[in-house]
Each structure stands twice: as C-alpha cells, then as structure tokens.
Image 1: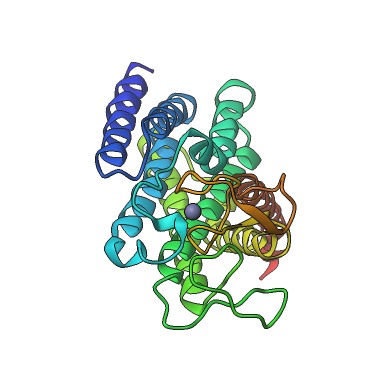
Image 2: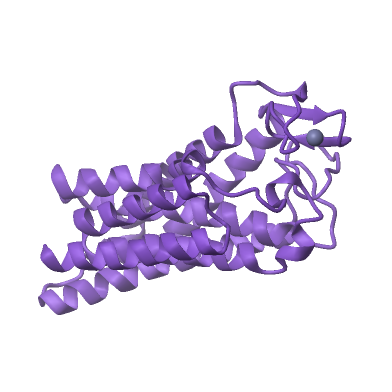
Amino acid sequence: MIGNWALGIGVGGLVAWLGWRSALLSRGGAVSLGACIVITFLAGGWAWGGLSVLSVITIGLWARFRQGYKRTLGERFHRGAQQGWIQVLARVGWATTLAILYGLVAEERGILVGFVGALAASTADAWGTELGVLSNQMPRTIISPRRLPAGEPGGITLLGIVAGLGASWLLGFAGLLFNAIKSWIAQITLDPVLLWLPIAAMLGGMAGSLTDSLLGAAAQGIYYCEHCKERSEYRLHTCGRRTEQVRGWAWLTNEGINMVCTLVGAAITAGAVSWLARFGAGW
Ligand SMILES: [Zn+2]
C-alpha cells in the first residue's frame, strides 16, 4: 500500500508536471490528471497505474509530434489549446471510476477488462486524431461521402484508423503483459481468459473511436467564428468572441463525446472478452 502511494504520487506527479511544462495541460488539467493517476495506482496497483501512464504518455508524445505543423490546422491544435480538467476527466474519468470500483468494491475480471477497454478507446481516439490530421488524404465522415477539413470533429482517415488500431492493440497487449508479470511475481496462474485482451481491446478501442467520429460528424454542436472565418467546437472562440451555431446539438460537446467513447470502449471490450472466452475455447 505504501509502495502504491509512493509510486502513484511519484509517477502521477511527474506525468502531470511534464504535461504542464510542455503546455499540453492547463494547471487544472495537470492537477486532475495527476490525481487520477494516483487514484489508479492506489486502487489497482502498479499494473493499473502503469497502463494509464502508458496511455497518457503515448498520447502526449504524439501530440508533440509535428506540433508546429498541426498548429496551422484546426483549433484543437492551436497554441494555447491546452487540456483542462474537463477534457482530462472526459478521457480518463471512466477508467479511474472502474479502478476505484475494482479497489473498493470487487476485484472482478470484468472491471479489469472494462478498464483496459476504456483506456484503449481513449488512446485509440487520441492517436487517431493526432496522427490522422497528418494524413495527405482529406478526412471523410462515416455518415456521408462528404469531405471535411483536417482537424474538424467527425473526420476519419486511413492513417487515423491504423493509428487507432495500433493504440488499442498496444493497450490490450500491455494490459495482458502487466497482469502476466503480476501473476508471475505473486506466483499464481494467470487467468487464461485475459489472453483475449489484445484482440478484445482492439475491438473495443475501434468501436469507441468510431462512435466518437460518428457522433462528431452527426451530432456534435459546431460553431462558426465570423471574425476568424473559422469553425469552432465552442460557443466562445479561442479569440474570445462569441460564435454562431452551424450544426449539431449544442449540449453535445467534444468532452461529452469522449466520455461516450470510453464507455463504449469498456463495454465492447468486456463483452468481447467474455464472448471470446466462451466460444473461442473450442477452437
Ligand atoms: Zn475567432
């Protein structure tokens, strides 16, 4: 327990500080991310904390990748477009809640798998966005053959999909690896059902990030800033002026969609693991 405290505060503090120093997180974003990581270490131990750190660090690295070029794209990438506490909680809030449930309520396999799925979906979506905008291909929406400007919500590219597949497989594989090491240290047999984690997390991660793109294209409130001649996801543009709504539902924000993405990721991954365990055993 003391070890988990020390590890959580050390690693969580370092990650939060790095995110704040590199201007990816606002002060509130850094504090809430640090708190979520500490809670995850405390509730689930190093394997759980390690997985959330893997997700956050890889997202941060891709966000820094060709950052100068991305700043010329959508407002999500503008200088000063930092992740605040709402954005952070939308991405890791559900995973942190599952960690708390596991630590306080029941050490159920389904909760563990859902946790991996929630992180897989959030990571897949973030990698897909950070890499997808670098594609030469103009993004499409899943709902129509319409093309979208790079960086606008709801657009998908092949590069983004491949990045999402890579991210969710990595999270599933790391989830399996960390649990295998944990069992090996404790000298207990690894739950064989967890061997399905990489495939299940890939399914859950893709389902989550495609739901994200679908809602972004079909339902998210999108605005237009007359002054900057630019589309925006917010009622108040980064320039400080009020925007006009051009499509979608005003109450459905990008943060709300990210939350749905992680919920779908957790549910599909948990469902896929139990389905694969039941029907895959006979292969
Ligand atoms: Zn503006």
